[in-house]
Image (cartoon, one colour):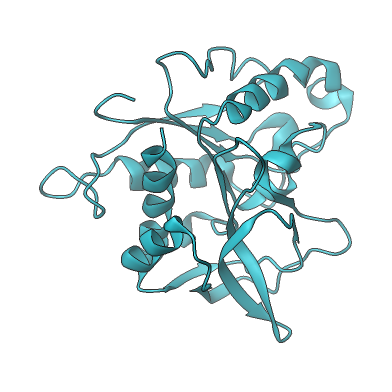
Length: 246
């Protein structure tokens, strides 16, 4: 990894966009948060500022993604459920190479961060749910109306939990949606929850897929989420931890 880690934010469009999420706006805010240095040139965790690029989700968007190469250090997936009808943006075969390149990257242990609708994207991939460590389930998963929300660090004994505790003091607040009743793999380690209907629902976890280094973060419905200092700290902490293992 270079002295200034390079982050690729994959922004939903076409097959992987929807009418409810402005993927361009949230991807831009992610890039702003991760690339902004502090006065001494480091972020609040003491890591260098990140070199961030944003790229639309086209079938060839990952053609240069090489786990053994020197182009990217972290892939951030900020895409949505989209429209799978072939006449809209190509059939499954047209996108097969895209999904295979992302699978190869993840299975090589290269870091992946999935944001918000990443739990409800890439339904045509045979590997994405395994890599992410969970998924949105149509007809079961839901969220209350968007609003001021609180997310709480769980007691999980995981090295990322300590990083999150230092960065957020154990609580994240943001104007956001509170994803509920997601399907989370037993092998995943839940680090942040929100309470709805008397139940603590996982919203941030580390995937337990063998050989995979992936974090899922359900926050980030729209750009307002990233106005919160604690939400920004959460994002930077996740990225710092993912890159620390490379």
